[in-house]
Image 1 (spheres, rainbow, N blue to C red):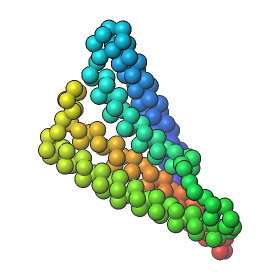
Image 2 (cartoon, rainbow, N blue to C red; image 1 turned 60 degrees about the horizontal axis):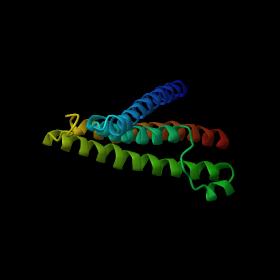
Image 3 (cartoon, rainbow, N blue to C red; image 1 turned 30 degrees about the vertical axis):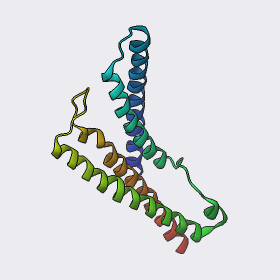
Image 4 (cartoon, rainbow, N blue to C red; image 1 turned 90 degrees about the vertical axis):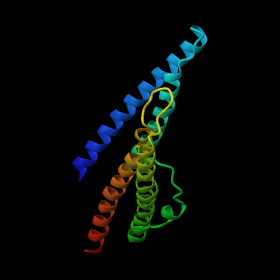
Length: 162
């Protein structure tokens, strides 16, 4: 599981870097075309908005995997041993449940609905379902990280009981 997690981390980090670099180029071109050329580019404006969605959600998934997400750990800081592991498991279950229900299930419903209605973006002509695919992809990644971390915590609990 550690090798798979490392591969997901590496792939996700390179993907986020590539999307961020493309986003930066779009924004720079948008500024140049608007203020220097006098004709703003509608394509890069729309592309920047879509890339921002992807980088934000994939970045949240990556932060979850690196355990650098925002957390209120007032309770878990005071706990020790098995109680701490159990509380961390409950938090992972809540995070994974939210990601599975809202991001994966709800996101796939949104993707399917927009693809079935044929909604396309005005400037790029891209089916909007592909844009919204960032929700289930990020959700699946968060669920993966929660399962991976949860298995580790269960292993630690088993070792503590033995």
